[in-house]
Length: 142
View 1 (tube, rainbow, N blue to C red):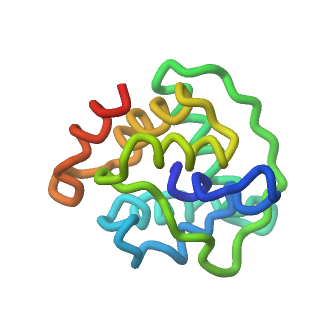
View 2 (view 1 turned 30 degrees about the horizontal axis):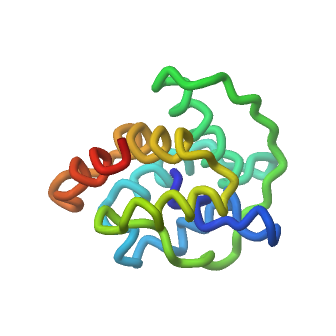
View 3 (view 1 turned 90 degrees about the vertical axis):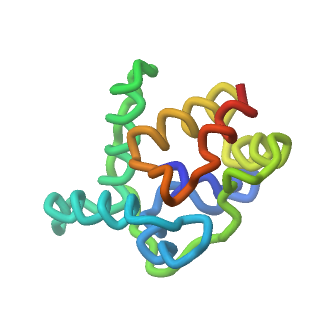
């Protein structure tokens, strides 16, 4: 779920994977059922020792691996957000420069940005009915 962490700013130490997406599904940048579906699926594994933020992170690790990406070590201990995080997740209409800058601020390279956008949206369930421009967006990034 790149939308949960792409608004992070590593230089200022804000944001990151915190499951704040659960408070942000009403935003135009997060339309559709994909996030609620994922969070509902993760909810069956949530307990007093496993935060939703850790489950979101684990989902990202598994998605990257499923797409042939590198093995990412997983460490738990994330703290769940108690409110929405920063807005500003790139949408299909967002220009390439802004998109890459957003990912860079969050600590990701251009290659990371493309992989997370293309594969993350494939695994995460972006639907053409919600984002009909998604194919065009990914093509612009390549």
